[in-house]
Image 1 (tube, one colour):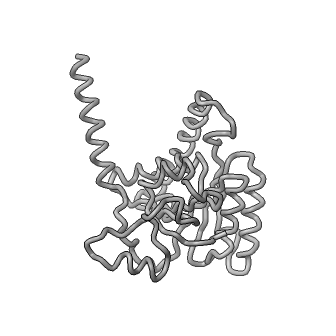
Image 2 (cartoon, rainbow, N blue to C red):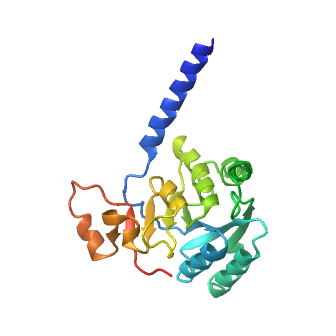
Image 3 (cartoon, rainbow, N blue to C red):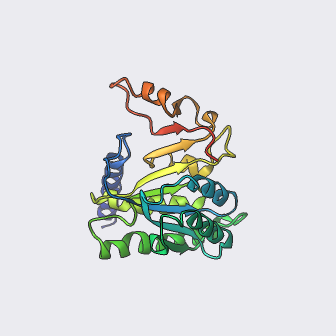
Length: 242
C-alpha cells in the first residue's frame, strides 16, 4: 500500500511539474486590448511602496481601471500612498475605480524561519480565497485582475503562486509584471530571483542586476527581437523608473 501511495504521489508531482513547465511564460506579446484592464497593484510597505507610488504617478487611470491595491494589514503608509495616487487620478476617475485588499504579511523584517512559514501559510490561505476562490465563484471566466504589478517583497511570491492556479487549470489568467527595486544594482532581490522564471515581464532598473539577458527598452529591444530564431526576452531594462 505504501509503495502504491508513493507511486501515485510521484506521478502527481511529475504531472504537476510538466504542467507547470508547459504554462511558463514564453515571451509572447500580450493580446491587444480594446477595453480597460483591471489592474492589481501590490504595495510592499516602506521603500517598496515609495517606488510603486512613483511608478503609478504615470498611470493612465482610464486605461487601467478598476484598480485593486493589495497591502499588508496595518500598513498605514501604503494606504496613504493609495490615497495620493487616486487623488492624482481624481480628474478622470472616481472612488468606484479602485478597491483595497488587506492581506496578512507573509514575512516581517527579522522574522525567524519557523515563524515565517506560519505567516506565509496564513497569507497563502487569505490570498487563495480573495484572489482565486471568491473571484472564481463570482466571475469564472475572468481572473481577479487582468494585470498584476509587483515590486516585492515576500507577499509578492504568494500572490504569484496563487495566480498560477488558473494557468495550471487552463483558465484565463492574470499577466504578471515584476519591477525590481531601484536599490538592486548588482544583484536581484530574493523575491526577484524566485519570481523571474514565472512572471510575464521582468523589469530591472540597472542592467547589471541580471547581466546580458536584459534588453534595453525601445530600439535595442526591437533589435534584440528581430531574429525570429531567438525567443523574445522577458527581462527588460527600463532605466530610471523612479
